[in-house]
Image 1 (cartoon, chains in turn red, brown):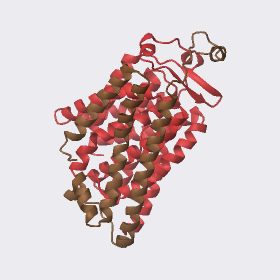
Image 2: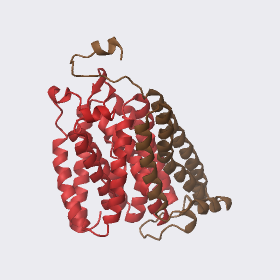
Image 3: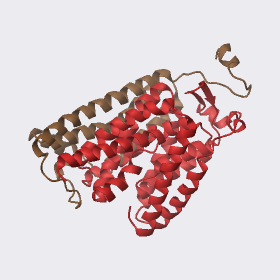
Image 4: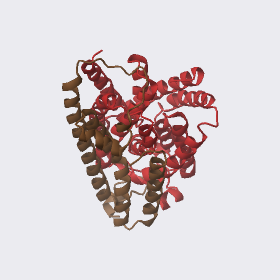
Length: 278
Length: 142
């Protein structure tokens, strides 16, 4: 393949990755890494470097409109980023000390279960819970523009959510990918944050988690300009379109897309755990 | 909180929050958009030059060679730019993109300080400190 052809095809694949990444709050890496390595035979280290670029491009590209439209809750994001960044430090420290294969298998099974769980919408009773004192004192409760008009929500189980976010950060340090999935699941299931707020706040957060590990990948020479160029431009275009779609989309369809993507991620993790690579 | 906001809600246990963070949200949104557009423009310029020179060479990423030192650090990228390399221009755009989340966290500190929200100024400073620690502690040179 010539560089021109390669650039064009990678840009198209990246566009889809950016679209899915911004709709689900997972970033583009979930789709991009397996496609680049399996379809285009790109070395895993170049693919990881490109994935880092794609996560930041999805996050910053879509976050601009998610934050302006009032979907992302910046307080929830900033508060939970303390847990994810500390977790990522711990994960990077543990990476050489614990068996990541076993961890990838457990994480894979967890994701398959979450893929099933995430399909179910919440009942009205689960939606209208009274405010939690801790969430109130941390000023986490908020509102967002739902399809029928502004909707308020009260954040629940803050300590559980914070703990899960610590785990999400540690996993991203240990396994490289998958932290976005735990972020959305923690906010959606544990903290009972509306799905659109969960995915857009996760989207807001993943850029910071990725930027924290950018130094490692850059200094190891994983970020190739020729490969990352179509990835960045494609993902960015995809995430801008994706953010327009999310605003008007039904939560039900977004849950479906999310559960399909984390099903793919779960299978990737099992594969990685059993065969030792992505 | 205004009366209208309370009456708009059916459930008495449901307390809508006034949208205090509107100003920060607009500032952060504009900052992210500007950062993304700037980095995309730089990458696009680099891409045009790169493709006009190398379009018909063959693409090969099967074997990992590691990037040359000029793409691994900020001084390296600047050196590469001075030598007129298109790939250096692309790498500069990628570095600008990587800087957007960091700029976003830094501006959040200012935003929360303007709101006199000490708790969140502290939270954001913690995040910024860990972020800079892991970025600079990795051997990456500014």
